[in-house]
Length: 120
Image (cartoon, rainbow, N blue to C red; front, top):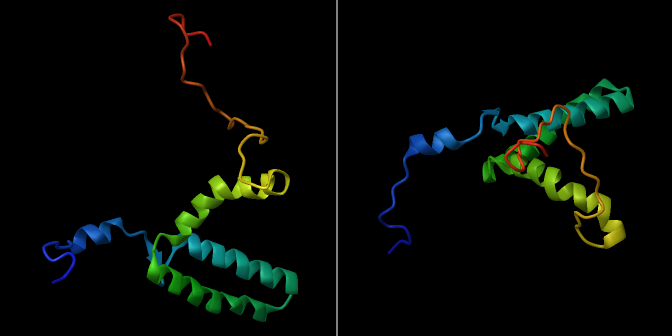
């Protein structure tokens, strides 16, 4: 007896939730691969280092076979926890949000209204 005997999966719904890919790899992974390949070429001044694209693409392909959203999750982790790990791990020995300065993005307008007059 199978674990999920009565569950059916709609192939159309699964296809609609998958990220767009090129050659089996998601676009953020291709951009990361291009950056790595171009930097290797620029630092070495040797055109053959541009061929590093092929094995790196193969590795990224194998990662995307397991989980197509792996690179999105990696970039999301880098934006949230990764930044705090790099900046505060040496001082606090943990991931801490306390000593970081918060900068508002350019063009940020606060939507909170205090009181009836709307003044902050």
